[in-house]
Image (tube, rainbow, N blue to C red; front, side, top):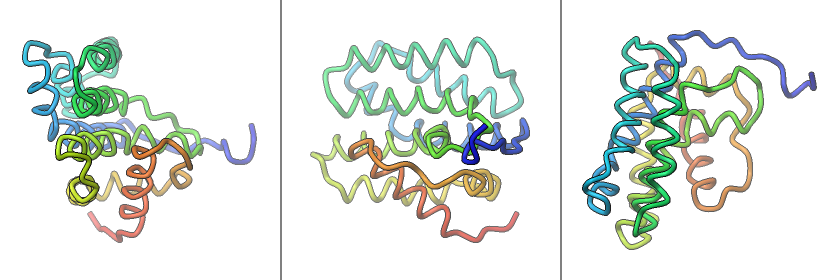
Length: 182
Protein backbone atom coordinates (compact mmCIF):
# COMPACT_ATOMS: atom_id res chain seq x y z
CA UNK A 1 0.00 0.00 0.00
CA UNK A 2 1.36 3.43 -0.91
CA UNK A 3 2.34 5.79 1.88
CA UNK A 4 -0.63 8.11 1.21
CA UNK A 5 -3.05 5.18 1.44
CA UNK A 6 -2.47 4.07 5.03
CA UNK A 7 -5.53 3.00 6.94
CA UNK A 8 -7.35 5.42 9.23
CA UNK A 9 -9.19 4.24 12.32
CA UNK A 10 -12.93 4.84 11.93
CA UNK A 11 -15.51 3.57 14.38
CA UNK A 12 -19.14 2.95 13.52
CA UNK A 13 -19.96 5.97 15.72
CA UNK A 14 -17.57 8.10 13.63
CA UNK A 15 -19.45 7.00 10.50
CA UNK A 16 -22.78 7.75 12.15
CA UNK A 17 -21.68 11.30 13.08
CA UNK A 18 -20.34 11.98 9.58
CA UNK A 19 -23.56 10.65 8.06
CA UNK A 20 -25.73 12.74 10.40
CA UNK A 21 -23.76 15.84 9.38
CA UNK A 22 -24.10 15.02 5.68
CA UNK A 23 -27.82 14.33 6.04
CA UNK A 24 -28.41 17.65 7.82
CA UNK A 25 -26.59 19.48 5.02
CA UNK A 26 -28.64 17.74 2.32
CA UNK A 27 -31.92 18.10 4.18
CA UNK A 28 -31.47 21.88 4.09
CA UNK A 29 -31.96 21.92 0.30
CA UNK A 30 -34.48 19.13 -0.27
CA UNK A 31 -37.07 21.82 -0.96
CA UNK A 32 -35.04 22.92 -4.00
CA UNK A 33 -35.42 19.46 -5.50
CA UNK A 34 -39.03 19.10 -4.42
CA UNK A 35 -40.00 22.43 -6.00
CA UNK A 36 -38.69 21.04 -9.30
CA UNK A 37 -39.98 17.47 -8.89
CA UNK A 38 -42.79 17.54 -6.29
CA UNK A 39 -43.84 13.92 -6.85
CA UNK A 40 -40.37 12.40 -6.53
CA UNK A 41 -39.40 11.31 -3.01
CA UNK A 42 -36.11 9.62 -3.91
CA UNK A 43 -33.76 12.32 -2.53
CA UNK A 44 -35.82 12.64 0.67
CA UNK A 45 -35.76 8.84 1.01
CA UNK A 46 -31.95 8.91 0.75
CA UNK A 47 -31.68 11.56 3.47
CA UNK A 48 -34.09 9.61 5.68
CA UNK A 49 -32.06 6.42 5.18
CA UNK A 50 -28.90 8.34 6.12
CA UNK A 51 -30.59 9.68 9.25
CA UNK A 52 -31.79 6.20 10.16
CA UNK A 53 -28.20 4.90 9.97
CA UNK A 54 -26.97 7.90 11.96
CA UNK A 55 -29.48 7.08 14.72
CA UNK A 56 -28.27 3.49 15.04
CA UNK A 57 -29.63 1.67 12.01
CA UNK A 58 -27.64 -0.74 9.92
CA UNK A 59 -25.37 0.25 7.08
CA UNK A 60 -26.73 -1.84 4.26
CA UNK A 61 -28.96 -2.25 1.27
CA UNK A 62 -31.37 0.59 2.09
CA UNK A 63 -28.57 3.16 2.14
CA UNK A 64 -27.09 1.92 -1.12
CA UNK A 65 -30.46 1.64 -2.86
CA UNK A 66 -31.65 5.09 -1.79
CA UNK A 67 -28.31 6.67 -2.75
CA UNK A 68 -28.56 5.17 -6.25
CA UNK A 69 -32.20 6.25 -6.49
CA UNK A 70 -31.30 9.84 -5.56
CA UNK A 71 -28.61 9.77 -8.24
CA UNK A 72 -31.20 8.63 -10.77
CA UNK A 73 -33.59 11.34 -9.54
CA UNK A 74 -30.92 13.94 -10.30
CA UNK A 75 -31.13 12.92 -13.96
CA UNK A 76 -34.86 13.68 -14.07
CA UNK A 77 -34.59 17.30 -12.90
CA UNK A 78 -35.42 20.37 -14.90
CA UNK A 79 -32.90 22.65 -13.19
CA UNK A 80 -29.25 22.49 -12.19
CA UNK A 81 -30.19 23.55 -8.67
CA UNK A 82 -32.54 20.58 -8.26
CA UNK A 83 -29.87 18.26 -9.67
CA UNK A 84 -27.35 19.50 -7.09
CA UNK A 85 -29.92 19.03 -4.31
CA UNK A 86 -30.45 15.41 -5.41
CA UNK A 87 -26.68 14.90 -5.51
CA UNK A 88 -26.50 16.28 -1.96
CA UNK A 89 -29.04 13.64 -0.87
CA UNK A 90 -27.12 10.91 -2.69
CA UNK A 91 -23.93 12.09 -0.96
CA UNK A 92 -25.64 12.00 2.43
CA UNK A 93 -26.54 8.34 2.02
CA UNK A 94 -23.07 7.65 0.64
CA UNK A 95 -21.36 9.27 3.63
CA UNK A 96 -21.91 6.06 5.59
CA UNK A 97 -19.45 4.41 3.20
CA UNK A 98 -16.47 6.59 4.03
CA UNK A 99 -13.45 4.35 3.50
CA UNK A 100 -10.69 4.25 6.12
CA UNK A 101 -7.97 5.08 3.58
CA UNK A 102 -5.89 8.24 3.85
CA UNK A 103 -6.83 9.52 0.41
CA UNK A 104 -7.89 13.08 -0.25
CA UNK A 105 -10.77 11.80 -2.37
CA UNK A 106 -12.38 10.31 0.75
CA UNK A 107 -12.99 13.85 2.00
CA UNK A 108 -15.81 14.00 -0.56
CA UNK A 109 -17.69 11.37 1.49
CA UNK A 110 -17.53 13.71 4.48
CA UNK A 111 -18.13 17.05 2.76
CA UNK A 112 -19.84 16.21 -0.54
CA UNK A 113 -23.39 16.65 0.73
CA UNK A 114 -22.52 20.04 2.22
CA UNK A 115 -20.85 21.23 -0.98
CA UNK A 116 -23.64 20.01 -3.27
CA UNK A 117 -26.20 21.61 -0.95
CA UNK A 118 -24.31 24.91 -1.04
CA UNK A 119 -24.16 24.74 -4.83
CA UNK A 120 -27.90 23.95 -5.04
CA UNK A 121 -28.70 26.99 -2.92
CA UNK A 122 -26.30 29.13 -4.93
CA UNK A 123 -27.92 28.10 -8.23
CA UNK A 124 -31.43 28.55 -6.85
CA UNK A 125 -30.42 32.11 -5.94
CA UNK A 126 -29.34 32.92 -9.50
CA UNK A 127 -25.75 31.64 -9.16
CA UNK A 128 -25.02 33.90 -6.19
CA UNK A 129 -21.70 32.76 -4.69
CA UNK A 130 -22.53 34.59 -1.47
CA UNK A 131 -25.43 32.20 -0.92
CA UNK A 132 -23.06 29.26 -1.40
CA UNK A 133 -20.65 30.76 1.11
CA UNK A 134 -23.51 31.20 3.60
CA UNK A 135 -24.40 27.51 3.22
CA UNK A 136 -20.78 26.55 3.79
CA UNK A 137 -20.82 28.63 6.98
CA UNK A 138 -24.02 26.90 8.13
CA UNK A 139 -22.43 23.53 7.43
CA UNK A 140 -19.42 24.51 9.57
CA UNK A 141 -21.81 25.26 12.44
CA UNK A 142 -23.53 21.87 11.96
CA UNK A 143 -20.29 19.95 12.31
CA UNK A 144 -19.76 18.23 15.63
CA UNK A 145 -16.32 17.84 17.19
CA UNK A 146 -16.36 14.21 16.03
CA UNK A 147 -16.94 15.25 12.41
CA UNK A 148 -14.06 17.73 12.60
CA UNK A 149 -11.82 15.09 14.21
CA UNK A 150 -12.66 12.53 11.52
CA UNK A 151 -12.03 15.07 8.77
CA UNK A 152 -8.64 15.98 10.23
CA UNK A 153 -7.55 12.32 9.99
CA UNK A 154 -7.67 12.59 6.19
CA UNK A 155 -5.52 14.62 3.81
CA UNK A 156 -6.92 17.96 2.65
CA UNK A 157 -9.61 17.92 -0.05
CA UNK A 158 -8.30 17.35 -3.57
CA UNK A 159 -8.03 19.90 -6.36
CA UNK A 160 -10.53 19.96 -9.21
CA UNK A 161 -14.24 19.34 -9.22
CA UNK A 162 -15.40 22.69 -10.56
CA UNK A 163 -17.51 24.90 -8.31
CA UNK A 164 -18.54 21.97 -6.08
CA UNK A 165 -14.85 21.17 -5.64
CA UNK A 166 -14.23 24.77 -4.62
CA UNK A 167 -17.04 24.55 -2.07
CA UNK A 168 -15.62 21.28 -0.72
CA UNK A 169 -12.22 22.94 -0.28
CA UNK A 170 -13.82 25.98 1.42
CA UNK A 171 -15.69 23.74 3.82
CA UNK A 172 -12.59 21.59 4.37
CA UNK A 173 -10.39 24.60 5.19
CA UNK A 174 -13.00 26.16 7.48
CA UNK A 175 -13.54 22.93 9.42
CA UNK A 176 -9.82 22.18 9.73
CA UNK A 177 -9.27 25.65 11.19
CA UNK A 178 -11.64 24.89 14.08
CA UNK A 179 -10.42 23.80 17.46
CA UNK A 180 -13.48 22.14 18.97
CA UNK A 181 -13.79 20.16 22.13
CA UNK A 182 -16.50 17.68 22.96
